[in-house]
Image (cartoon, rainbow, N blue to C red; front, side, top):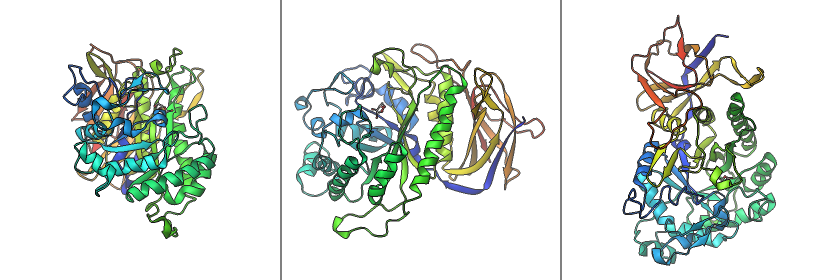
Length: 494
Ligand code: AHR
């Protein structure tokens, strides 16, 4: 089959929210402690922030950073992480193991966000925490009046409010093995109303992200909570059931299906809340309910019985191809996914990996960085056809070899077509056509690739991911455009 890509340039579909390129940090293993925060390390600054990590994080430019968990949030009490460092409580991390000394707390998190240019996104503890405690946290962060918690923040050296806009009500509350008692949607609904009321009365402008799960849970909670749910949170981890090369790419298809199905459910609820009891004394949501994919990534290397150690996965190039495919999904579904935070930023299933002497960028870092830097802020509709990937038995899988999305950048007028060739051995030649602007020209192609799909990065070796910028790339309609095996290409057009 001749591969073909057709981009419709006549109409911008929807704006792509920059929060699509967010990241997530948790008190889990070496993500926060020793990852981004390591006081006493020669690699850290006076705040204790690892500078090598911070530089790499800055280049990823996440517009939003989620904190402090994850599952760990169920034991997190924000008051343990503010005030004089020597008085902060040392807490056993009963969820993930190890000890949290709380030296990195709310203010350190906010400072880190400011350093890397990210907006803070905070998840509250609905399990061992209370609605009042969560509302106090909102007041501590955002309060401007002469009140106890706003003054407490001031006394900690932060005169100006932190203005934290995004707040998550719990994390994966339906997960029965996790500690907590909100596994029944009715319990979550009851608790969420109380948390929402108290938190919104501390700051009416905050946006609430509520825990999503399987369709039945989502429907049950939205039937009751839809007037105050700004975002429904979904999580997606690609976990491979086999080592088959093509099998991994099913995950992009499944993730897209999950988003499309959830959007169908969201469409059942009114775009605007028409009637809302004024006695709540805070406004209902102002927009249609959006999806926050606030944990996504790849979680497939389970080689030992040590759960946390296994999370320090080293990713090969095939997994970077999957990350690029998942970014294409996020772009294609950007009308409903307006926030996504990759899990997690450092060491835990992460694009940045450290030891005490240094750090390196994993293969998956590169597509995350490249899409953030170069893709446009409007979605264009685009169709692609190519042969299907075959599994180890030679059967067609659900994934085409070429995975494509197209965007438009309104700052520079560029059309960017992102193409992942997932074929492990073959170059694929595709014809390109542009509806509505026949004379669009490629002026630059940025290509990421590795010597093989099994390539990994590591300490003390040069980054194996080659980024080639071809400023003389041209599309020849007779010969088509050639996408090398296992490559990620951004074709920039004007
Ligand atoms: O990101 C690792 C863990 O995965 C998070 O703590 C949890 O929310 C999810 O199950």
